[in-house]
Amino acid sequence: MKRLLSIGFALAAALGAAEAGAQELTGTLKNIKETGSITLGHRDSSIPFSYLDDNQKPIGYAMDICYKIVDAVKKELKLDKLEVKLNPVTSSTRIPLLANGTIDLECGSTTNNAERQKQISFTNTHFLTASRFVSKKSSKLNSIDDLKGKPVVSTAGTTNIKQLTEANAARGLNVNIIPAKDHAEAFLMVETDRAVAFVMDDILLASLVAGSKAPDDYVISKDAFSKPEPYGIMLRRDDPAFKKVVDAATAALYTSGEGQKIYDKWFTQKIPPKGLNLNTPIAAELKNEFAKPSDSPDPDSYK
Figure (tube, rainbow, N blue to C red):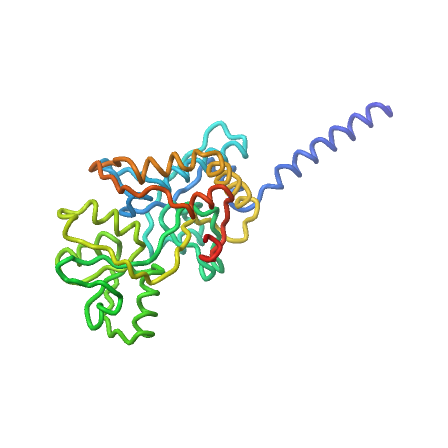
């Protein structure tokens, strides 16, 4: 009888431990386990980070990183398969759709800063950029001060339009700031002379110029609205268990050297759908970041 009781207690303890193990999952990991799916937010025209190919399939540097994170989540949850759902986002919708649970990761070209970290979290930095402007060479706009009194476009919901607004006030530029719904629309405004310049992250401007009808017609300013800024994959705030998995996945990717291989694929080789080559080798600052991954929003920490 005593032996039966002890076996019963052992079984109960084992079942209790199993239940406790199952209950340990919280937040995003719990939801992914229960639904068998993870949802990635992607952009339509953030070349080469996240954009649509000829078949309207989201591809890019940030998408490749997100798929590595998906593999890590699948392994962590011991799932045989994990469905990946894709949901388009814009500069304006990306944070609300992440916060309300529509997407689990935002795979794009989003600047990690202290203000955004009050709303959401970022994993380790995958790119460093600065905010500049593109204009037609014929306009002869060499500096930010040359934009005085002129129509200038930037994408709504970005840090860039905020920086433009701040510079406009601080320098008394009297610029007519035009918000565009996405980067493609903003660049089109410069192409069609509805704006003299487009303020955006320099790498995104480089990709838009490379893909334009007449790349030689444009110039990107040396004058910058910002210090080098980190890009990161966004995830929900206050979800430490999920962030731990995501951070470990990106850190492993970058420190292994595979991160630079993915970087080279998108920035130094021909990319679909037009076979463009951005000819942007990895910078020393980003190499240092890959060696010691960080999710810091402070531009000075990447020097």
